[in-house]
Amino acid sequence: MEHRAMSEVTFHHHIEDAEFKKRVRKTTILLSVITAIELGIGLTIYTIHKGENPSHLLVLMFKGLVCILTLAKAYYIVSVFMHLGDEIRNMIMTIVVPLMLFIWFIAAFIIDGNSYKNLRNNYDRHFKESTMPRPHHAEPAAPEEPKPGKQ
Image (cartoon, rainbow, N blue to C red; front, top):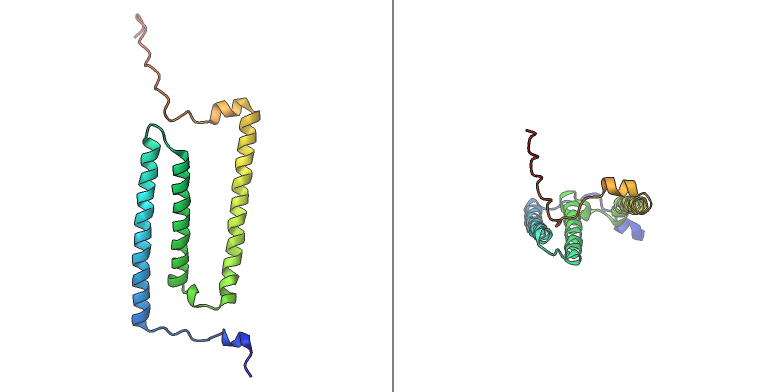
C-alpha cells in the first residue's frame, strides 16, 4: 500500500520538447503583452503628472494596477522559466513562504521609514525647510534685473 504523500512525489518530470517550447512561447507572448500594458500605464501616469491638475487618486489606482501586473509577470516567470510550476506543493511552499516574509519585512521598513519622515517633518522645521521639494506647479520667480554700475 502506497502512502498518500508518495503519490505526490515524482522523480522524473519529462515534458516533451515540443510541448515545452509551445508553453515557453505562449508565456513569452503573455509577458510581452503585460509589459506593453505596464509601459502604457507608465506613460499615462507621466502624462497625468504633467497636467495642470493631476489626479492623485487616479495615479494611485494606476500604480496599484502596475504592482498587480508585475506580480503576475513574476508568477509566470517563476512558474514556467524556473520550472517551479512542475514541482510538488511542499517544494513550492519552501520557496514562497520565505519570499512572503521577505516582502513583509520590506513593507515594514518602508512604513517605519515613512512614519519617521512624517514625524521629523512635523516637529523639526529646519529639516522640513531644507529637504522638502517645492510644489510642482509653482510659478517661476521673475529674473532679477542687473544693477546699474556693476558689471
